[in-house]
Amino acid sequence: MSVDEGLLRVVGVRGLSAGIVNYTVGAGIFVLPAVVAARLGGASVVAYAVCVVAMALIVMCFAEAGSRVSLTGGTYAYAGTVFGPYVGFLVAMMLWFGSSVLASATVANIFVGSLGRLVPLANEPVARAAIILGLYVFLAAINIRGVKIGSRVVEGVTLAKLAPLFLLVIVGAFAINPANFSWPGMPGIGEIGRTSTMLIFAFLGVETALTPSGEVRDPARTVPRAILVALILVTVLYIAIHMVSQGILGSSLATNTDAPLAAAARVAMGRGGEILVLVGAGISTFGYLAGDMLAAPRLLYATARDRLLPSPVAAIHPKYRTPHVAIVIHGVASCAFAITGSFGGLVVLASLAALFVYLACCLATIELRRRDIRAPDGVPFKVPGGPTIPILASAVVLWLISNATREEFIAIGWMLLACTVLYFIMTRWANTPLPATRDP
Image 1 (cartoon, rainbow, N blue to C red):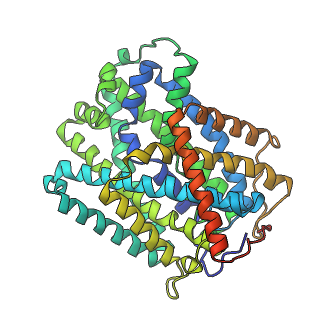
Image 2: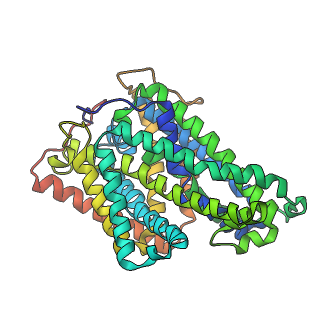
Image 3: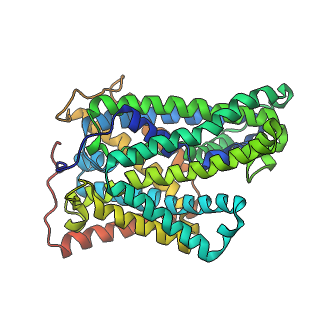
């Protein structure tokens, strides 16, 4: 892989932790408890336990890979370094289009929908399009002006959106009815597996938040610590939110599919609490979009940096030292899908693509350690147990993928085919030799 030239390493543990938490705690947490309760009822904690174990294994692979390869591009850089440019390109495109563009467009519509519940005018087509356009222009502008500014925005938004969730947990704890925690018995393995596959999507985010690795200070130290801090915070918050919601609403939690946390807040804190949670949902979606605009364009930059996309995509702004062309491209693509709403049928594909990206990282970790690839600015973090944890993590990801439907597998196959065709078109039409894969 090529080196990053001109990018400033200014993101520390706090900024990267905030980015991971912000990317993980998205709009899904505001409906997640109802979805899980509808499938497992009082045994929902089992699915949470499965997902926490799975994510612990996966993020340890990200921690080691991220400490060994400090290039911008995240998983694309890890996979490209050990498996070559073709696999790296597939990972980059799956992560960018599947897990970033479509997900960003989806969340942008959730943002406008939440705003529309408070300001009905926002539901009008013209107003909706104007809000989405203004939102992406604003986020693109602040990220072009500097990654440090973008990172600070993410930090601030993360604190703002977590506040109402922590308030719900603290105040709601006093409104819990212990009878609502009755154990219904252990669910079947199949039901646990399918529910865990759905629930794991709420934990996704680390793969995109680590994309600006070329702008992280001392990555060998910063990446593992930031991942650990973020996973602990997200795990505690998710379980606490579900337990409080279940303790307040009981069996009715499963029926409040639109806004279960708002319903719980209304019982615990009245109408004011409900409005606060709805505002928190709006802030959460905005925070996700802010984090996405910070991280996702670096995938395009990294791919063009390695001459797999046209070189102008890798341009660095002469004043702000940011990949401004990639930021604009990502903003335009996400905005277009958000306004047209034509992404609806690809939402599941986006989630499945993220799991394939996770698999690539787990497998890359094994090879990175075998070749003892190290970043030039620090001693790498090593997952204990040799290849055991990466192998277990790969098995868990494959198990989660196996719960997908036939239609979902066909969709991901078409996406891989399209990416393959694009790869060979770009390399042949540009008459560009494949970049030599080398240690960073």
